[in-house]
Image 1 (cartoon, rainbow, N blue to C red):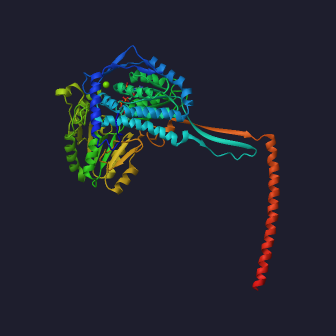
Image 2 (cartoon, rainbow, N blue to C red):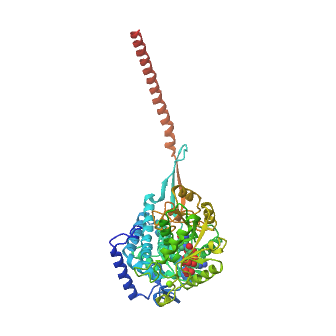
Image 3 (cartoon, rainbow, N blue to C red):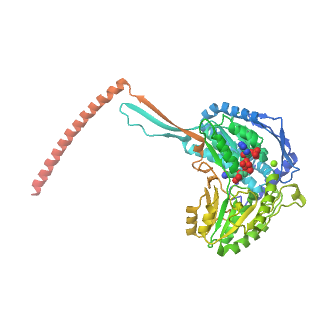
Length: 571
Ligand code: NAP
Ligand code: MG
């Protein structure tokens, strides 16, 4: 267990004990990997007839775990378990739910090295990014707990109707929907499973979780934290298997009351359309892709700009929804910025991401690796030039995994389709613009609106925030041009094709998305006796008022007399 708390600050300046703890965890996992893991339904381990091997993209000889290939019957089992547990969990006082969730979050923190090492081995993330994903998960869960507490369980006393002869009390209560489905992507397997799960559970929903097949193991280790925290059986259910079969069966299940899907635009939109074929509308929170621009003005600090852009273009091999995949540079500083980007990128270390010195690991799987080869070929044919990279690496140990070079592309005409298509790989296109208006027009001319970055002077940054169509925006940030949102600081979500709810995860407005409102109006007809009383009361009031006014008149007379007397004296 770590004796320090990983924050966005320590990410950039980690203490030595972090490295020691991480290295130890990698060694242990490498010696013990390959175990079989079940699905987790109704508090029980559930095995399927078919299994699949979860192999590492660093070295495909490494079998990390043997996982279950669940099917439609497992989808149904999990849904039924969640349905059965709903009355109990939704009626558990929110204070109790929050307590259990905080326990789960603290277990995640306790296991940060083990989870971070497994993350690096399964996703190919470097160690700091892996540990960051784990800590962010705990922080997202804590944040949902804090919101529940701060809002006192979302119970709000409303005004009282001005009814004569009745007592009317109105209370607004946010209540859970029921069974919530969380479908998560491979790239932030913990934060994007644990974050929505924490919110759904704090709100009182029960859960079915379906991770990306590429990251089934690491999400199972996260589910163990919920289990070990003592969350009751059936509240958190976990199934593994192909999205196209098991995932589809979950989405089509009549039991689902709400969904959080984080993944690609195409899968998300299909899900949305399928979900609309129901007998009534249910909530669906979609967090989808991005094609995030970084704009560099002629007034920018080019050192900050180049560091921030390289981090955001190639962190996690460009496989972040927030990756800086387009760079738009004003002509007067184009040559200098491009030279700096080349220089910094050539210093990035590609290799086994469990090694301390490595910045870039492999891409997630064979299909992404093939995509890299196809896109770079298409770019060459489309007139693009490789400022850096452009190739996969196969020599030595690289040949065992899916290693691609960090690739900056220049000279690709703005009309080329890859200026608008999310490649989700370490490929970023750089374009020269005549002025900032042209940059903004290009930046906004895409289906997406997730993150965006800018480097320029103060007046320009105001202009940027106002004009850019994106949910998460940064100016003059060397820590990352478009990446690196942290719960409680930069709530994360997208506009346009990047997200459906218009409210960002880890922010003020997120938790209520998991609840529907109920107004409770309770009217009490005034009883007969009590009904007579007001008349008596009114009469009594009248009498009192009369007395008072008599007194007032008398007092006035006294005052008048006194005034007259003094007036006489003065005269
Ligand atoms: P993906 O291919 O869309 O898969 C996401 C999840 O959906 C996986 O669990 C997948 O399972 C499942 N799935 C696939 N088809 C399904 C279906 N018909 N029904 C139900 N589930 C189905 O995305 P990915 O490659 O894992 O992740 C990359 C994408 O996620 C990128 O587009 C990225 O921008 C986006 N993303 C967005 C955010 C955000 O916050 N906006 C954050 C991270 C990532 P299988 O793995 O078994 O196919
Ligand atoms: Mg794998």
